[in-house]
Structures are given as C-alpha cells and as structure tokens.
Length: 82
Image (cartoon, rainbow, N blue to C red; front, side, top):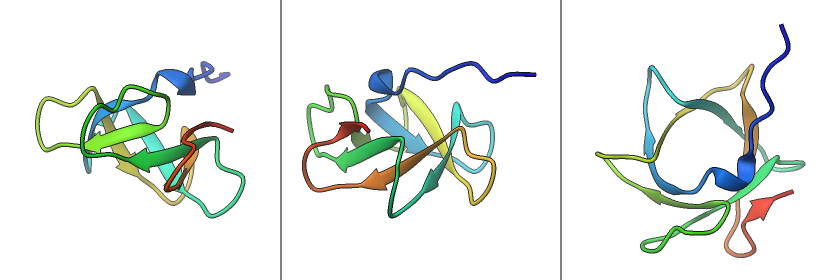
C-alpha cells in the first residue's frame, strides 16, 4: 500500500518526542534530509522550526533508526524542506 505524501512544510510548531503512538516516525541524518530542523525557543512558525515541549504538542515525533516517515537534519539556520 502506498504511503500518503507528507506535507513537510506544515511540520513546525510545538513538538513532543514520544516513545509510542507518534504522529510521525523520524530518522536524524547528516546528509540528504527531507526536512531541515531548527530548534527554537519561541515562535516556531516557519517550516522546520521546532519548539520542544512536554505537553500540548502540535505533533508527536518518535526518533527511529529504520522505516522513518521522513528524515531530518538539525541546522542552526535556514530550516525548511530540502
């Protein structure tokens, strides 16, 4: 069954890392990411800007080593879709 294409430009905001029942499974890579992620303290309102929270997330993310929904790379600037 084909997977639904994920609109990565919408994945920003309040992010909670979870061990189970994630919205998305993500693999952290050093090269060729699907999404460049910038961790921010406030106003995570652009694609790839994530504010890490412990409650009331916009998205729940599980870090995996295999079969991710998409791959991310942490960056200091210029976050967004590759």
